[in-house]
Length: 305
Image (cartoon, rainbow, N blue to C red; front, side, top):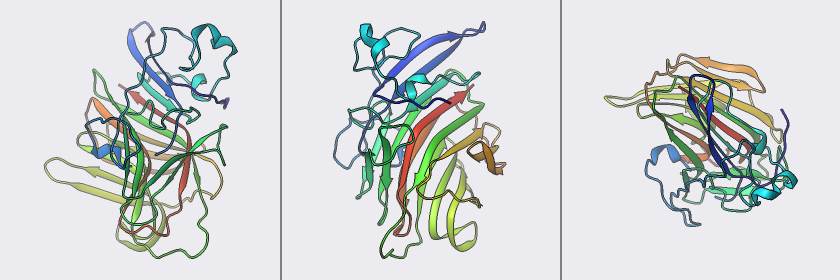
């Protein structure tokens, strides 16, 4: 896959195949600022510690991705970002990409931004998978949140949802305070179920006390709540970029893959919904003093219907 960057934001519709299925694509890359899945009402972006939302601005009707900050006549000369080179996978009707290479608000293109209780959500130029920028998130402390979310509703129920992101865990330095809380990093949620990837340092995971590492959480809600928490025993390497792919099928089947290799599978919880919300960032719950910050880059969401 070619990794390129620049500043891009685009949304376009195109007819795919002879069946006439609609394709929606949004491509962005922007900057600073928690858990979007619980927030169903978009709000206006700001620097305050509140949920915000931004509606993507449609680009010109063209088959070539366009930088929102470059006139159409200059597209050929504009530098391309990673997202400007991406299209929806074959068979997927809805697609979103964020590479955080823009100069506008980091939430541009997303539908919700949550920043509260001292959470951190910012653009970093210190390290990026596709230069020059990446998303830096941290929830060290107690109940600190900094996340970005994208919600999409379609005309048919989803059959498969895929969240892909380059993830780079930071290294904690100095004296690390104790903590038993956890941090949600990736999530796909519907109106009645979800699949998510968490990290904890000393928390209780599925009955295992003092667990440190990543784990899967699945929930089914509405008419009672069912919960699964299962360890993902393969660790991400600190200060190293890894492609993490979370795949959730409407049947409930869940897969987590690192760099294309499956590291976790579960039957999960099924859902038949037309609307899904994808979330990336750090959403802390409890005291998370020993949880390292995480960097994200080249984030992609895709829905098959």
